[in-house]
Image 1 (spheres, one colour):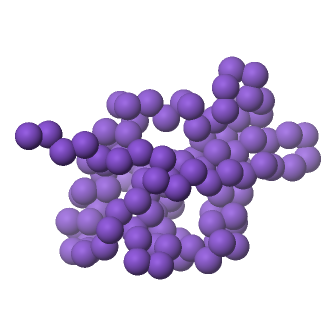
Image 2 (tube, one colour; image 1 turned 90 degrees about the vertical axis):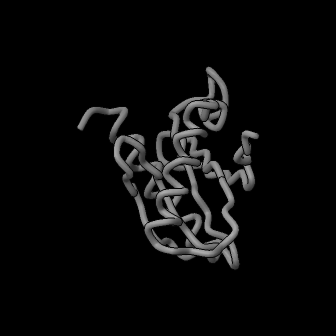
Length: 122
């Protein structure tokens, strides 16, 4: 595992800890649908939460959440739809981004609820 992958894995573990501490029920981590992956699928009250975790060791080039682009959002929406269908769920879906900044010996975790919304094409 290279350093970037290690930082990402550590960030995801910190995100899971943080969400659990906030009362989220973690349903899945690293759930895959074809080429798509959802970092964390959780339940927060009556919401199914699809969370993308972005971890960086510096915010020199911007906050971690700024790296979730439109293409990544489309992939998450598609994978979330597959998860809902596969599990026959009837819950409102919320797309969150969990931003993790890693310093030498600690993590700063910030959850952005409703970070983006699916667009319905007519």
